[in-house]
Length: 272
Image (cartoon, rainbow, N blue to C red; front, side):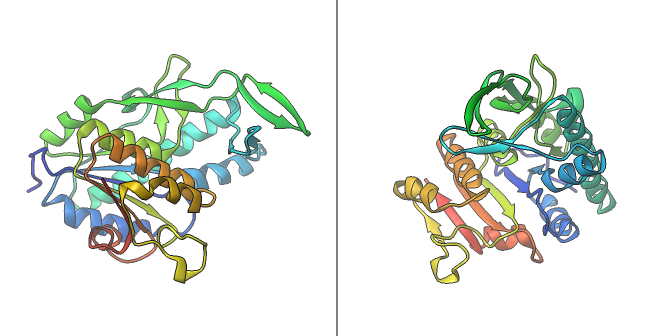
């Protein structure tokens, strides 16, 4: 019997890149969902990239004048991203239900994240700064905590994709920061962000530089240590802690019992 209590909430973000062991993750989630309320978010990057390639519309990136890169989500890419998110969401929901967990997918008009489209992005194009007006990525403005709590109260496990509702339709958003927004809206006790690496390194991939704990006063340093996609994960950890989440762990999603191992300290632990 799954608990209907809404204290001790655990939020889990399943990475969308290659390497995540989805079956092992769902086995772990199913074991844990029988004893504490949880919300599952998932990424979609690898699937969306493959679907873009298959559609003959390969992914492009935008680089800001400061050097920050992001997926260029033009209208065609947005539509592919939405379909990929729905497919990935259904896959997670079906796997959890097959394990006896009443998972509830929140896609389309049921999306649980709110956002605002970035209608004018400054980006470097052919060495010059241009303004991009047709990008459908978004800034997260909040999460529908009430809707998610209703599902938790009914004994369900909400499964949330990296999409946000906006006045401009569904938007591509960062999944790690979406997890932080959901965890903050729910005042979750813990947030686990699973990746395809062990956690944060000062000098990736040097194992001697692995970071086990990041106290609040080292968060700025952690952002400097992070490379590539890890920067978004560290930023998500920071936003979750600022939002009142008690503890955030970035852990390895390629191993058996990845969530339980992360909660046991097998990852990089961020604390307030």
